[in-house]
Image 1 (tube, rainbow, N blue to C red):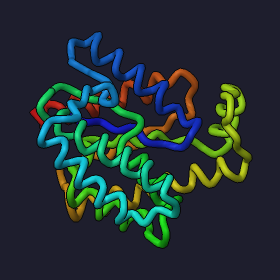
Image 2 (image 1 turned 30 degrees about the vertical axis):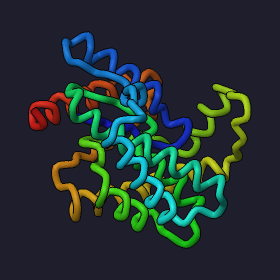
Image 3 (image 1 turned 60 degrees about the horizontal axis):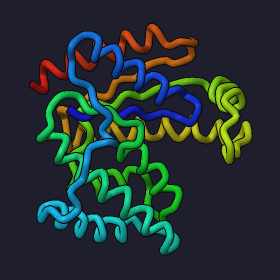
Length: 216
């Protein structure tokens, strides 16, 4: 089962996902990092998926060749790991899934909207089984990004507000994908304003246990 965390930068995706993964392991459930699944590049099936990713990356209408290469890397990596995830079983968790990357593809596309990109990609690639939407206010996201002070993290209050707003748009995209393409996909929204995230972690763990029982 694949679980994708999505939220604005500073929302606490990585923090919460690590706490959730640790909690699940403590309770005897296999929870792994989806992004660490090893890819055998020469496998025939993987070569097919990589070839398809070339086509899909072009269809995202990237504004430059560099962006086209980035799109290919994202789509190919996700496609291959998504199939391997099904074979591996257990719970695989990512903060860098395809819904998250669609925002970047949208920002670097010539004329495609997010819902068009999502529809095109998820008609050919299975989406996550569960999406955890980590929601915070723009004020909180700005404060957290300021506090962590990462190198090369350039932002303003305006850009942070835009990041939070685009997550709201993505929630609408997810609802359409669930309704039209993948009804079994679950979307779980959690409020991450609380420092420490105890309530959010408990809510996510409960949702994932329920989803795992249904998925199994």
